[in-house]
Length: 342
Image (cartoon, rainbow, N blue to C red; front, side):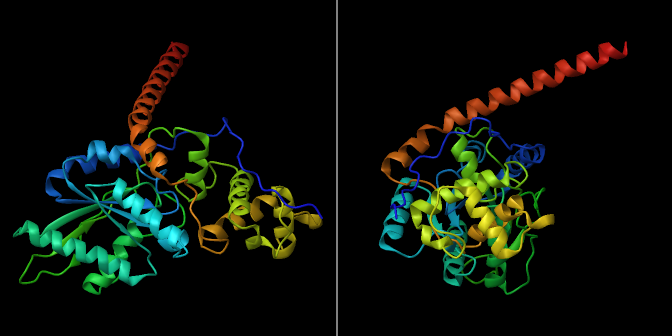
């Protein structure tokens, strides 16, 4: 039997959309900026599985001047607790200085307590009579609302205050401030405000869009499920193809995998034909829930972290250019429609 050789490079898909910057994203960002003077701490959430790709430079540009805590959420979905994971986390922590960095898993209560401890120390240093007010921000579906709920439950032992969901866009407006730490003799209470996820104006390359989509930052209807499943298969084979051995032997053929999943899970259409779309969605969701291996999608090293900081301006400038071109196109279409009426 021939030795299985996984793909080492994923083909470039230039036809993929390169933006998911919606109207409520811009509106939400404008609202955040308008109340920034009332905030003394920005808690920025990024997805642990894509620590570089889930960074949104808009927050650094529009919400600058405030102390920032960066929380890499969903650690349990990308880390196996290995030495390599620990070393990578330290590398990321060093690269984000002077901002503080913490890692979080909703299932790991100790990580929630570390964030509460940071917020408590920060509140003590501010010594405000009105309490410390923080705002949680991040890309769509990185776990902002889940983090807020976890902090509230652990901090003041009260129920969930923010709605959560598997798809992005559950939070579309700024929420009211929610207490996460009670006041004490050392400090006043700490309040945290939930905000809508904000996508980057322009994604610099197609693979970055695939990573964001695979992690759920865009709706599953934006990119074909079979394409997402194929990109996942690419990473599974590099990580360890044994994670899908219950369905088929190692392969680079996504249709072979999806057909096997359809037969195994009963996702069949009329006549017993495999439903590859349903199987693809199931496969992607299994990975998102941590049942098809736990690994990150970004390549993290000193070079990629340095390149990340250098690409910020390009992404913003490209995004502005696209927005400007879209406005021109809409204005032109409006003029044409008006002339047709006349």
